[in-house]
Image (cartoon, rainbow over all chains, first blue to last red):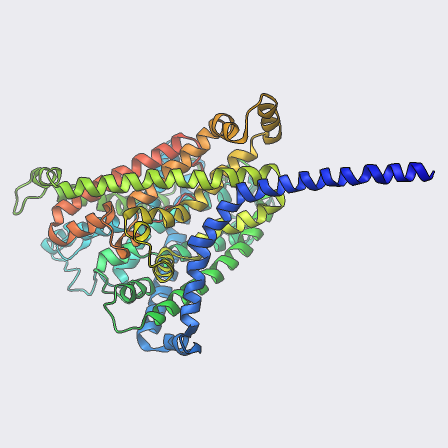
Length: 304
Length: 270
């Protein structure tokens, strides 16, 4: 008995060491394989963001809210309201037009080939943004663009009527070029997820097309539409290259103001730039949280 | 996922209603006109004369070729570094520490939360040297890997989920292969189509990337297009078309490699 116990405990010790050794090896494996990735994200994503935070809420005299309070000056307030307005409107345009295109494209009567044409073009157009997109629109609707000149020849003066490609209305028009395709790409699975049985059930209960969409289709799609809208909003909110190239950096949007601070050609202090950047992260975090909540709701219906 | 289509109005015949047709036509025009106008404009030589002079002038600009090669080189370096950092990490997470999955998923959406212009502001605030690091265009690869991270991670995640990693590792270990050999000879070939999609998307992102290069003052392809736009509008139109063709080829590759179906594939060049 005594002996058995001591033999047992004697056997336990090496086994524990073996286990420790194995867990150490496993530990080392985790450090070796996953460590570099985490370090990379830390060094090139988290630390830069934290550095901005430190810059925005402190200086050599210690903690201060002076710079965050500096966000209340008219220039930065305009930048934020412009950015939010532009993102909200262009996301709405993308939502409605992209959603309708996806809906008509997926209807049973749609011409063969329309779907693959639209989806493959959408994949390209959603990625065709920034400087080239700005120049494509300048060649089309700029003050000397093709359509502008052609319309003038037939008696329609776009710029005389108040339109400008280089202002908010123009930017909304340009942003739609990547918002609509993105909407089409993200909403297709949701529209495809609408079961035919639901529609037939609505019809057998005497509901017409309108009643079906009002009480069944749209309510089911709502979380998907909401998450798509938030994705488009964030997409437009963080856009920099397109408005920069279109206006040569002369428009009051948050990303443009930040880059102006970075290149030192405005009166704003660097710390206000950091505060602006922090404000952008704040908006994006909010958008992302709402997106996650909406996407979770949407997945409940599609049963994934 | 259900593959069943919706029946819009099942009883309204087999055709798109005229309102839908008009909408598709208008949206189609909206997407086609800028490309057509850019194409025509790139051949404009002033007045009513048209010809390829913008293209001829571009071919002889060494700075253009340099910027194009630089962007292509950065794209390849980004792909290489992305794989070097991500393949071992995602592999180990799937094989040994699946409880880290939610952390990985969380990290992969962080690049959306920190927009490029914010990240570049953070980088300039954090790194002032050394010169061999921040002074050469290769510096751009550091943030580009972050830009590509969501897509590379998702491709690897989906690809590895489809593999029986445990059996593969045990089989290759029993045949005497170490981890390095296993990753190179077993894991990567099995992930080929997933990696091809991620790599092509990375190329599309990096070839069009403007934010980092512009703020950090490196002369990449997109920065060069912007520079040309200040001096010659027709040459800028020609380069815009070239850029569209590059994006188109990359996305065609993504679709052909079978990874782009219905997924949200959006680049970081906005």
